[in-house]
Length: 239
Image 1 (cartoon, rainbow, N blue to C red):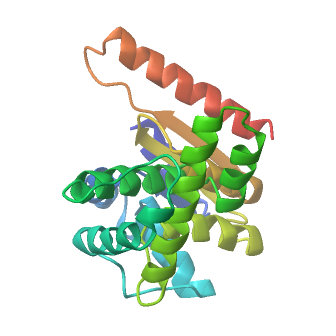
Image 2: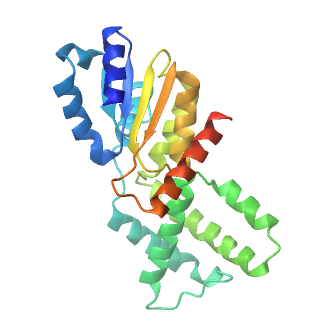
């Protein structure tokens, strides 16, 4: 409610504002804006999530993609990649009949790397630094599989995981949020990639307000998670 009041004030002053919420809260936020603010508010404010924001930025500045790979498509490509390199792996022994388990393990690992903006170069540097031979071998295997998997994937498809990475890049190049107020609401936490986007937004916009969501009857672990998220936001603000 307090954020809506701030957005209302922005609209009265004819100042552009954006309300960024989780995907599952987008429709609710749009409804609240339509219900509580005047019809003219639609000219100055927009409820949006990270996916929609990426789409909007790509439509304006380029980078819009259409041929996104599906979950099943990823599995098929990873299976093909594993079959191509399995004989050259140092630590992972993927025997016939165990491919399905390996596909999930490596897809999850690559998804985590992209979620936290870990590049192939950074992964290679981590492999070079470690003195643990087993860990070095596992990282080498991951680099090998990731390279073949992405080569096959990018021949025909785009990966939705890449959108937020490209969003950060586009925001570095273009001052989309210049002169605007930005409100972030209803998140429990942010991925590394999302924090990078928030950093770029904070550099551009006039004001950035972040309200973290605390569920009713929150347990100690939930309080701890919110506390860690708050610390990460402070780190972003101090960059």
